[in-house]
Length: 80
Image (cartoon, rainbow, N blue to C red):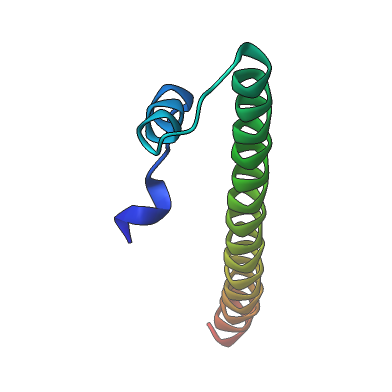
């Protein structure tokens, strides 16, 4: 899953485009940089959403476990 963490830098993206035989002008470079930045932002947003979802799931599980243990501790105190 290392491919998920791979980031293609704008300079490398530009080199790849140039090697493919495409001529680049300043406007083309600027457009390419803008597209790359948009992709980065989208990727980060998806990553944040996935982390947020997993944290919420873990929080719910811990909360349920905490409630259960609190009930058991209360019941344990009543027995003795």
